[in-house]
Length: 139
Image 1 (cartoon, one colour):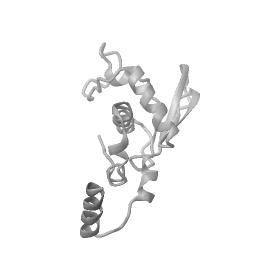
Image 2 (cartoon, one colour):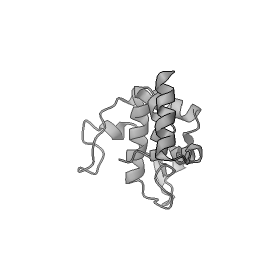
Image 3 (tube, helix red, strand yellow):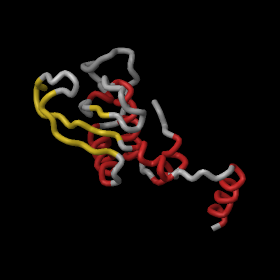
């Protein structure tokens, strides 16, 4: 899994609730297993079913992947919040990206937009960051 520095540096991670954090972990895991790697982490597309993440029945492969034991409703609520914040987008598809094979039913194609947070990261020195954090702690 990848936790982008910008997610931490912008304090976005600190503002998330458990649902948003669960959805973020799922989205970054899905990126890792996505076939198209033409984009950097934090901005890749994926179309996994939400059941794929916990996969209690070992229905989805590969067998060696790490399962994420969050319920589908938790992930869905988190994804909706991340979508409202502009950090994930989705659209309905009927064919698999890259192969153009027809899917057994409609699926969501998600695009991670976490890399967009990089533009908000300051370029201050470590001492400036230390002072800023101290100021926030005081008040």
